[in-house]
Amino acid sequence: MLLPPTPAPGLAAEPAADPRPPGPRWRTFLARSGRLFAPLAAMLLAAAISQVIGLPHFWAVGVLAAAPIGAGWVAYRLGRAWGVRNLAVATAVVAGLGAVGAGYAAPLTALTERGVPTVAVVQSKERDSRWLKASRYGTHRSWRYRLVAADGRPIAGELVRGPGELRVGDRVEVVYDPRGRIEPQLPAALSGAGPVMTASLSLVLAAVPLGSCAVGRSIRPDADERLRAALMRAEAARSRRRPSPPWFRPLGRTRRVVGRVWCGLGLVVAGAGVAAIVWGGGRGSAGDDSTGPVLAVGGGWFGAILGVLVVLLSLGPAFGRDTRTR
Image (cartoon, rainbow, N blue to C red; front, side, top):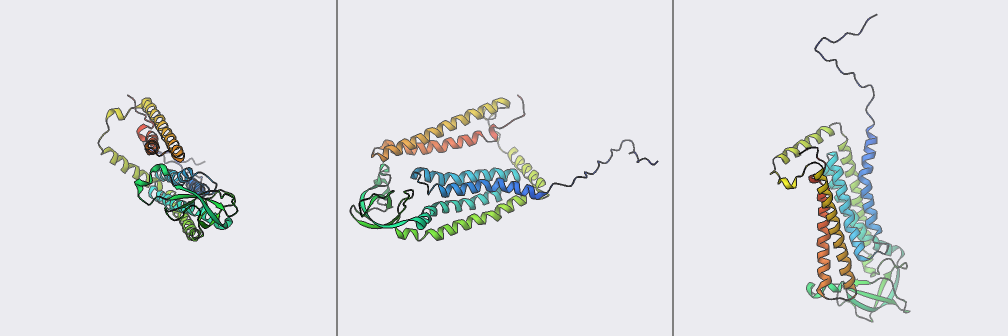
């Protein structure tokens, strides 16, 4: 009976080859594609649906602005982890532009499909956000006109036009939403909805192959080596930077506690900013032309943005896990 040769003393035996074949890469491709495209699809739906369900103007604009920012942040984090940050961010930017365009064209498209044309009478008018004081913006401020049908029935929503275009008692042809969720529009404003929606959907579709290229590049055989090289370059660049003061670099458990404190502070500041915006907008809509609501809204936006930045800073690597000890 022949025995297998034994390795010579001092020489390590070669490791046995793994008989298991590598896992199918298409599963990894599908999983990563789902993680990348899911927030982009949610962004598109949120941007389009928020404009046609009757949300107040403030919240509709907020959703339309926050959805691309949130999806871009998720794409940036995924691309950074996979070593394809630039391609992932480019995918989010292209899809975000398409989502904003779709959000703008969605109410116009809905009015084109289900809108009812009628001749309305201007019942009243007021400056759009009159508490912002139109004198500060010259004569370019828009006006909001309340309309009634010819039989005296009020039309839901308000028509937004420039100053001096309409007067109380004028008759104007509009297209209104019978469900009362979309503001009425002039028939001429609906003619540009189709091209804008087509261009927006084209951008969204263009983001699909771009994101697929990003995911495919992240699972190439040399992806780990490229990611490791990128991390080494980032670490080398970080080591060349000027070190931060010791008080900004707490160690161990103290580092995490400080990060949580900053996160809580950022949430409080952001919440106070949103409350100031809502309060100032409410007072302004009630007819308060003083500077108090104006300062409240301006300071509220500043506080909300500052709070979000503080929260993002607290979740960053400056206050992350640290295995060093004092």
